[in-house]
Length: 135
Image (cartoon, rainbow, N blue to C red; front, side, top):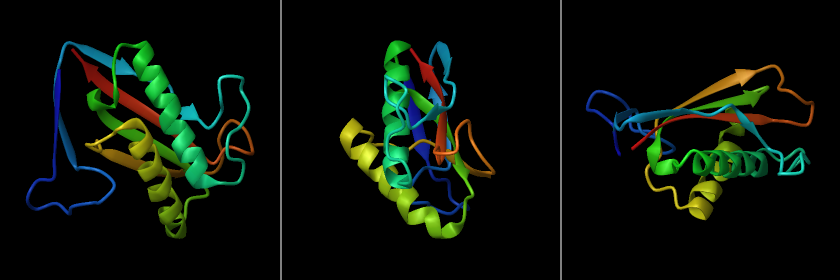
């Protein structure tokens, strides 16, 4: 399976992700949105957006592994952010950078960030959903 990520001419280059992913493979993997909870259901990083983003990515990695996939197979991420404002971009980028370093993510897939009013619990600040194409 191969995912090629690109930033085509005519679109802006964004530091956090690529604009396009071209995937070839035989299995689509759809993950439910992952929030910042550990295996016991305890919230990780209450009040800390960067820590919650990192835990969400760790949970996505765990779910991908269960499906026989890795972040290298991810074609698209959607990130839902509670009460999003542009001043939170640094914390989002920090969480993604920390998760990428910890998980060995080298090619950031296309990403859509969506501001939402709330998630499943009042302490949850972010939820990350992934679609992967695995061989």
